[in-house]
Length: 277
Image 1 (tube, rainbow, N blue to C red):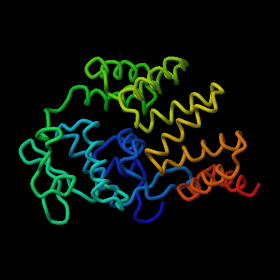
Image 2: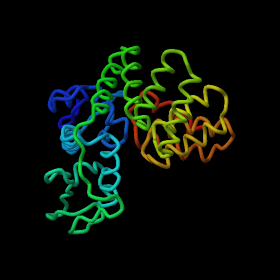
Image 3: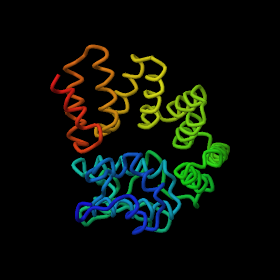
Image 4: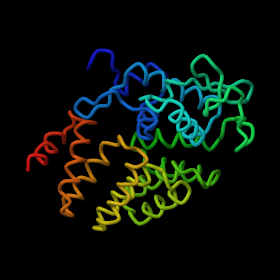
């Protein structure tokens, strides 16, 4: 392993998280690996800081949805940051969210006085039972306990029908158990809740591709990349479909971007050969 970098197992051990949680936060795109080695994600010190931040925010009761929202605002504050949650510290004063940036306490728009007039005071609710169930489901899914994961995700959705991540993950489990029609319905329901949900767009694109609906698969891969431009696998899959549609030059652009993002993957050499053709 490269010196100064940590694999998922080491991150989990250092921070007291499960490997499933580490994989989940990576999958959301909120925390990015510094590099990949033979398919394994490796994280640097800034990523550890970001993982520590999400662990803190989770323990303080913030939902996944709120953490996503705050991370998006941080990206607007520090657009050049590779690990937004490591660049701006988010803390709670009482039950109010405070952003610490450049030695000041500010809101995500850089205002010295917290002014969340669009949403009212940013107070944090007590830890949600639905969120606790979600992470239990995530661990069960990670360990291949599909029926248990399914039951837990269903319970999450009883408590919070608009939990986009639970809808997507339940779709993944239903697909794993051989029910693609139900998976598609769940992905589409997640997109009705949040049209910008990266994984919902990507997974629906995968499913449509398997069904032979290449035109719509391309559209959903494009949407996933619009929301997450550094999503290596989406570049790879979109390049394949563009080739099938005869759009060779556009496909090459995505092959190049894939190789920039993941040059040592098991598919990297195959991608290089596509550029030579």
